Image 1 (tube, rainbow, N blue to C red):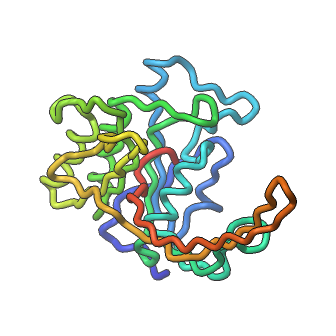
Image 2: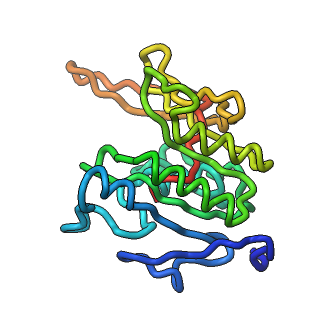
Length: 231
């Protein structure tokens, strides 16, 4: 990719196992992390045995997943583990876009994370000041939904839209239960953002040793989970 545009005013902040000199480049152009709100509410961050990284580095995996969904480069010959199941080409929604990461949520048990309103709002504020063009946020609270004026995601995204910055929010759908979409702000974008059109041939051995080959072909839309948080 070419040089970073002069309109970018952000920076790459380092920390535990994260050296901007070797990690940041013309693709990953910004990194920040936010802990003041978390540690005020939950106490010191647990970094023992790499339980978390006191840095923008992703520990839970959610941040890497959402970043690649948003702006991942085109990668050929991608498949599921053994046998290249459902092999093909993978790419993010905007593979030529640049990425800045704002980590606001922190792993608590390698399965879930915790965020605070203070840290989320601080990240929105910095992102706007840095010169972000699109904010993609994969954060939300499960229903019942909070009022727009009391949700940090809704407040932060509202100010972003006021400044002409598009905000894409994850659905956070916890189906198959109904009414589980977490982000419903009228000023944010929350729509199906990608498709999977692959076959998944799978061999199944029944109890009587009969062998079947199942080959479902899926065309599935999924909600965007691209992102501002979780590293």
